[in-house]
Image (tube, rainbow, N blue to C red; front, side):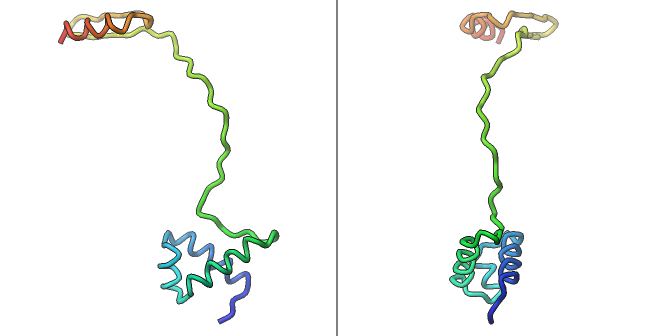
Length: 101
């Protein structure tokens, strides 16, 4: 059976929407996978035809440096509330937590 460009485009879109592999989609549609790939390649080569793709276009932006807020560390142990500056030495804090455990 000869298909028109519009029919092939509809098949490409249907396969993309089906979430089936090309092999399984072709099996269900009684299409040879080699014919499917051949026509898809032909269509992609044509500048006036848009063939659907399973990929999304994304825009890559430059990462920005992480700037933490100058917040205090709040530690609640039982009825005691300890507020520490963010600049507290990490080793000191580790020792404190070990002592409280």
